Length: 108
Image 1 (cartoon, rainbow, N blue to C red):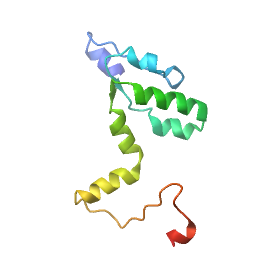
Image 2 (cartoon, helix red, strand yellow):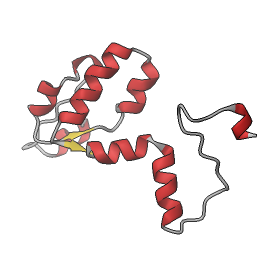
Image 3 (cartoon, helix red, strand yellow):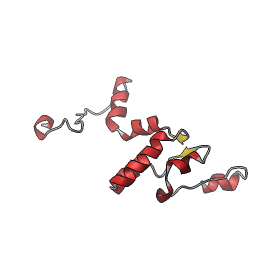
Image 4 (tube, rainbow, N blue to C red):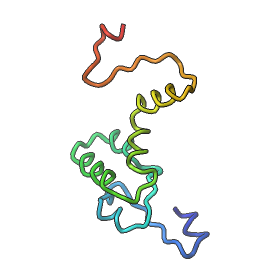
């Protein structure tokens, strides 16, 4: 953000800290790049209330890059691994243990 603003005087960079992330703040910008702080970071923080607010902001924002659909695809490793496998990309043998459908017995 700093580099873009420094070298492009006609662009104003708005660095949004985790505490400032809201749908209203995202909507004030032409485009929001979620590099450096995205749903992976939010999940790791372990704050369910903040997670719900920030996830809602990301889902409803119409000016994110990557888009919410792309972000969600990236967040779920099984989604992109299956897409790669369907496209013929070589992958290591993988067992998908989906949430609420796994048990130690099934994995063995």
